[in-house]
Length: 76
Image (cartoon, helix red, strand yellow):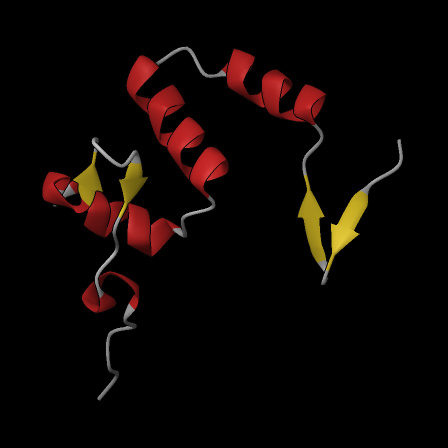
């Protein structure tokens, strides 16, 4: 199977995405996968977004991530 790489990151083919999704039986986990894959949101951003539904703008059909959504926590 030919793998697609872009800047060292493996890109899933649609058929590979479907195979992964079919294995997940829990609807909430499917929604998490769909959101992550279809938006390209990073895991930490997705976790923060899940706590802030107001970041979703249904009228514009987009997610607005404020600066704090992407900010890395400072290590002391």
